[in-house]
Amino acid sequence: MNLPLYIIRLLVLVFILGIGLSACNIEANTNELSSHGLGEMEGERCTVQLRRDYLGAETSLPIPPTTDVFNGAQVSIEGRLEEVGHYGLLLRSDGRDLWIPMEAILLVDFAPPSYVPDGAQLSHAKGTEGVPAKAK
Image (tube, rainbow, N blue to C red; front, side, top):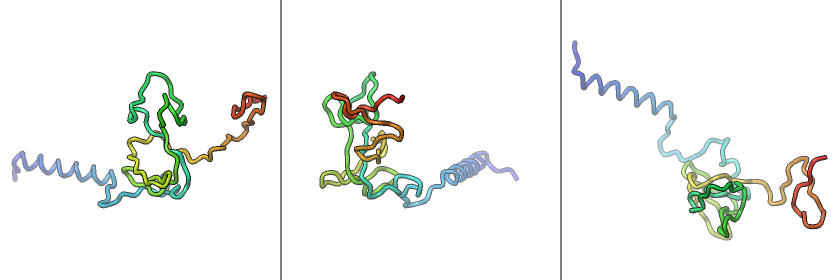
């Protein structure tokens, strides 16, 4: 029994697509992240750093990832994380709900504003407020 070439190609294509979809573990109508993602942090206060290229602030100069202002423009949004999905997150900020697409997010920072890394001591010398002291 000889099958026409186009039927063989069609069967191979269906087989490859079936393997690809099962490997991706695609579930219909699911917009949830795994329990190990941002979903665990819903309800927490955070700062969302936006990608600089999405804001028109691309530059060849280095920009710290946690800076809040670049060239006079706000590049982060603070608020409470309300909801997380595959395509974006919902942030409550200043009484408004803001939907931020995932592709526009550089990072999400859950550290409190006064966060100091373990082992760092703040210097209290005049003119150096908020500058970590050098380790001895």
